[in-house]
Image 1: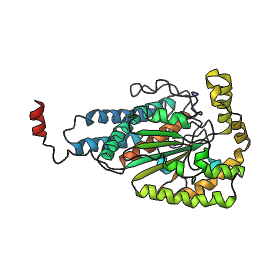
Image 2: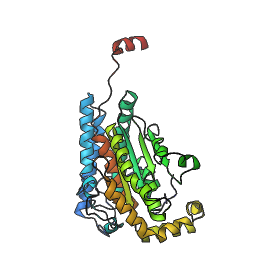
Image 3: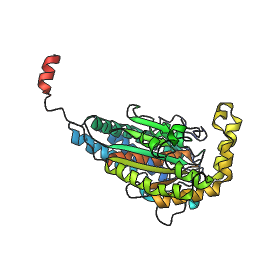
Image 4: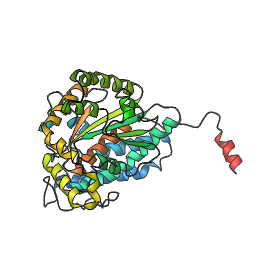
Length: 357
């Protein structure tokens, strides 16, 4: 996994959650030291979602199962006072420097509430993932690309491990993009990206991406300006064609504060098992923080489109950013409105049962 997958602030027992209504003491600015009405509301909504999920597999028909799964997903979304897809989508006039890394917009609960949400949402992501994979096997072009970007120590690596905690590895492709190799440089900058795109029915997760090929030369001047600026149009054309071919695209920028990044860097130096994560070049990027933010701001303005919008997600609280990504992912899959593929026409179920008997 990516080197910025620090364990700081990670959920304990990520795959478990307590009984609804037993909300612990608050440990963040959303309600420190007390149990609020909002927290109890979240517990109630999550329990309703769990109760509905428990009825899905007992449904007699495929349409009924899909309807109950959709209702469960809607109940999960009700924990948000404002949907992340609406609140965090980049829009004209929005400034990345105005996003507070320690904020939790749209979510009124605390870390424990978020962990419960992530655990339940992950089970439904797995359900929709299997559904998309089954359709891909049968010829559907539906697939999903998730682009994760952010400064180092923003939590990109941990997103995958937590959000997909109940997913099937068969159907998920993770790829981390580093410095282009000599072979990469012999081709167009999108060449190495196209090689890692999701196959039909698959989810691909990019830890960094083709956007590095705009931001890095913008900050360091490694290419002439007319070369890297031309890439904006190339990227928009590429993503528009990708979306038109049946691939949904989620582009997420994890906004971490400099203070939070500092904590993670120092944590890496204090823990011998994390020495491998630290590179002196991380400090050079940190020294150019304002330049990076300026470059990313232009990326958002030039490449946040209807087909592939950007979401700017506060990431100082890992539990919050993981909950946001879980919500965006689950609702994206649900909104594909897929159904389970039927038996092939030549398959007679009665004849199959007779032969098996």
